[in-house]
Image (tube, rainbow, N blue to C red; front, side, top):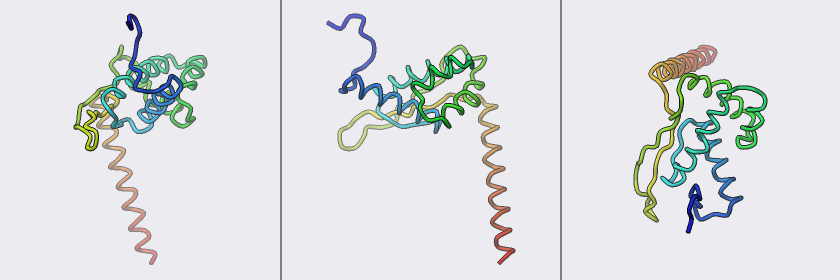
Length: 147
């Protein structure tokens, strides 16, 4: 019997499972949205939410604890400088799981795991994308004019 045994095994050894969840959590923080199987998404959500809660503290010890899991320096700094402040006043529930489809081939249930964003964050991101697009168009026009 598996009384009081937490988490799914995901048909992997302990080290493989740990590496998988570490990589999925890092990808989630890097891209803010990933597609994976439902079981992996549910397990990754546990890891990611704990990491965000730890990152909200923002001290050196927290950074070192989170760096055990998030091993890309760029993603680690993004987590502490960008993502954690988004959730400064939120007590939990930083991620959302959306079921999408059955995977062709094996029929595995797929899901999207994404970071929850407020309306202000979405508006700011949209504005930043629009500004980047305008800047790109401006550079293209400048190149055309030089030719």
